[in-house]
Image 1 (spheres, one colour):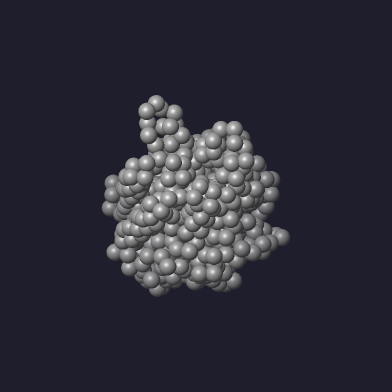
Image 2 (tube, one colour; image 1 turned 135 degrees about the horizontal axis):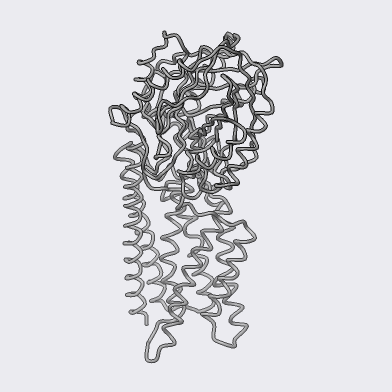
Length: 596
C-alpha cells in the first residue's frame, strides 16, 4: 500500500544530533540563559550562573540519564539523552527570554529570575517523564529517577547561588508534582486506544519500534513481531518462480510469492526482496521479486512466516524443470489505456497489471484470484501475475474486488491474454539481466536491491522490464523512464517491489521519484537496461508454483484497525499535550504572581 492510509508517523520522530553538536547546543543555550539572568557587567556572577545553574546540571543530566535508566531496566541512548536535555534547557531559555522582555516594559512588576527558573522546571519534569516513560521504560516508578535528574540538579545548584525563600521551595515541590501528574495524564490517556483495540500498551511499543528502526535490535524486533503474531490469522498463499538459464548458468530468477512486503521497516515481510535475493544466492542469477497482486491483508507478522515463504521458493527452484523456449510473443496491450499488458514466453504467460498513468496502488488478492480462476492452473500456460505498482498519488489507486476498475481490468486481462496468444510466433529467445545497488533509502527512496532490469528479445522485438526496490513510483515518472528507454528497446514497463523498508524516513511513504526523480532517475534506469541488453544470450526457461496453506498473515482489516488506533493515539496525545501545557502555564503564572 503506497497511498497514505493514515498519518505519517515518522515525520514526528526527531533526529537526535551527535554528541559534539548536542554539547555545543547545551553550551550555547546556557550562555543565553546566563546573559538573561545575570546582572549586566557582572562577569563573575554570569560565569557562576552559566556553569552552575544551566550548563553543568544539563550536561550532567544528559550524561547520567542513560546509566540511571539502564540500572532501572530501561534503555536510553546518549544521543536521545542529550537531545532531551537540550530541548528542556531550550524551554528554560524561552521562559527567561519572555521574562527579560517583559522586564523592559515600564511599570511591570515581575518575580525574580529564580522564580521563573523554578516555574520552567515544571515543564522540565513534564517533558522528561513523558519521554523516558515512552522511550526508556514504561513504568512510572522506574522512569522517575531519570526524569528528575535535570530539574533537581538545575534547582539544587541554582538554590546554592540564589538562596531561595521558603515559599519558593514549597512552590518548587508543588510545581514539580503538577508537572509529573500532567505527564502521567497524557501517558495514560494516549495509551487507551491501542489497549482498547488490541489489549496492548502502545506506549510500551515505542522503545522497541525506535530500537528496531535505529539499530535493528533483535529483542526489539521480537517484541514487535510478537505483538503482530498475537492477532494474525491463517491464510492459504501461493508462491511461484520463473528461471531463465543460459549456457553458463542462471541469468535471472523471478520470485512471485503472494505476500505483501510490509508492514513496516524490516518487520514480517518488509524488505522481502532482499531476503529472497540473499536466500537464493548468486547461483540464481539476478533475482527479481516484483509485487504480486495483494495488499496489507497478506502482510506476514514475523520472520517465521517469511522464512516459510522463502523456503518454499528455494524448494521450487531445487525441483524446477528447465526446458527450451520454442515460441514467444512481444509484450502486447489490447487497447490504448488498457490496464493489462501481457507477453507469452514459451509456456508462461507474463501479465502486468497497472492503472498507470492514472493512480495505481495495491490490488486486492481477491482480484488476482478471479484472474487465476479465469485462467486456471490446469490450463495450458503458467500464469505469472504482477502488480506493477507504478503510479503513486496520495490516497488513490487501490483496486478492490467487484469495483468497476476490477471489472474493467478483468476484461482487459482476457483481451491481453488472447492477443498474446495470437501474436505468438515460433523461435528461441534471448535474455539479459543486470542490477545496480548503489542507492539508499534516505537519498533515493530506493531499497537494498536497487534497480534491476530484465531484457527479453523475442518475436522480433526487445522488451525491458525494470524493477525498482521501492514503494510505488511518483505519478508521471513512469512516462519519463519509458521515454528514456526508447533507444534501447521496443517496449518496456517499470515496476516497484512495494518494499516497506523505505518507510524509515521522514514522511513515511517515500515513493520512488520523490527524492530521486526526472532525468537522473531515468538515466540510472537506462544504464541498467543497457547493461542487461548487452548481456543478451539464448536461454531456457523453467516455471513452477506451490501452495502454502495455513500461513499466518495480519488478515483483513488489521492494518486499518492499527492505523485508526494510532490516529486516535496521536489525536489524544496532541490534544492533551496542548491542554496540560496550558494547565502548567496557568499554574506557573499563579505561582509567580503569588511569589512576586
